Length: 414
Image 1 (cartoon, rainbow, N blue to C red):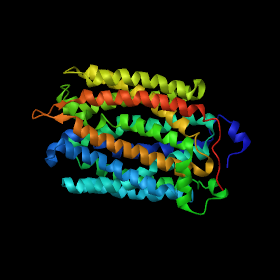
Image 2: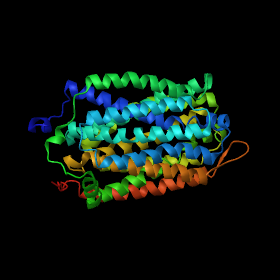
Image 3: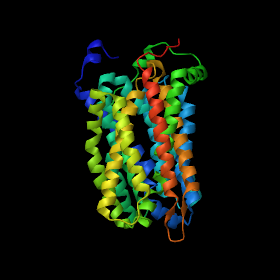
Image 4: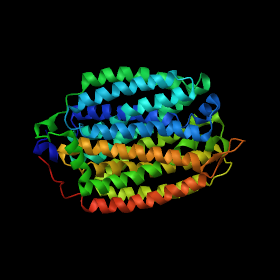
């Protein structure tokens, strides 16, 4: 457990640096697997002869399955060594990714995404619980900055390479490559990471059901869960059809998509740590509000674009993702201060459940809001953008309310 000296330290030890690297990779793997299907939409939809509703179902299937598994795991999340829990769900995640790479039909791909979501959906909550266990509050902005930078790394390495492989071979290749890399990484994690079990030294509730129930009924946690719901709803509304919109509406060639993702990721990979440092220095809520303002402006601009140049689309994407990062990082850092130590696992698991369920619902709704014409163009994308703006404003208000009580420790149930 952390000592008083550790709690005051602002310098990372060699082991902490290694753990941050491990957690960042796990986020990278999960994010790439989850997000990869969306930019491949321009290839998968014609390859499997499916429509926008079916493709929206494929995207949301992972999220709905992840929501179910996260909720079911919440009662047990604080009863095991977090490293063992992590490796269990990571193993299932790798098997699901392999299945995605072998799927040949819409039904098989849908089932594979459900299986992958059942395991992959829990990994993020365990990663956040480990980060909260091992790092004091004054370090968490920087830690979350690095971990969330995995999102940028997925833009630079994962998604562009995935699209490249799909363009030169087929859409199965990216999933097969990710499964192979995942096996190697899993072995390294098992070797390099120490057990994370200090929370087991505190008396646990006997009943997993009561542990889950007590987490759900804590008033401040409920406010946090509602805030997460609206954050995720806005975040997932545009993503499923972004590649189709960029190609067919903005006039960007399919072969140029990797360039957009690469340059955007390259720019934002430097933003993550900076946002983390600013969150620790000037306040997490202030940085979140700034990110929200940038996001709203850029979403309105992006969803109203017509045919344009690669340069303009790339610049718009860069600034939009700067705004998104400036929301995600301080949000996660602030959320890490909400639960008590004995409820971190269950709190993060329920949070992940709500996030995935809201994201899946948003993807599903987006599939019914937008329409893909016979020419491939995405219609009503601007309406989805308005939904993102509305949920962004509501999230900012709710996070302000939550931040007012974050200094008061939550009660610990014996």
